Figure 1: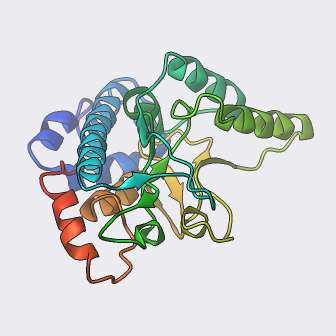
Figure 2: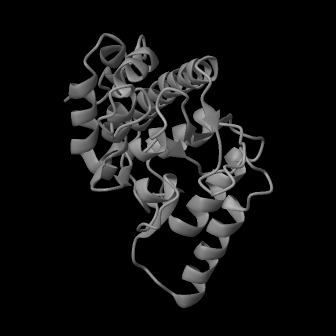
Length: 245
């Protein structure tokens, strides 16, 4: 591999899987000068594509009459998407100062994408909340008073006070049971610290974050189809024209 691989142009040309493979193979060596800038550019392009996909899915769900709501008995209405707020960069720095390196895809997501919550009820697919709809919230901009950031900050400070050196799971979403308002397991999250290009996402199983998001968008934002007859046309319409990551 040359000192300055042409990852971004290759990614744009469609060599996405090979580029991600090369980036992952490097581990934290991707931070080497001459490599880091190119790797971050790929991660930023991925995030721009993900944001476009999310905005498209939210718009289509709105048009189809999907009600976005909390995963509670009251089904409290919510805003499904919020772009990064003015505090995104400072929060990134705060997390790095206390936990160490953040993977580049997580950094790109926080700076470019923001917070998304697709949980709700679709008029043609009443069990849509059972299909593990995409939720990814780090900064908490979707609900400024919701306490997401405050909760994480408290967990991080408790960890520092206890002197723990074990990996930290940054929560980004409830698990698929909680999304459907059923008691379940722990939250989905990102393992930190991590100096690699792609984050390690922990959900039902562990996988690269880009691999998880690819699965999500291949299924129109709902990666666990429930088998309802009505869902297939809904998912087909949601997934048309989404950008590959």
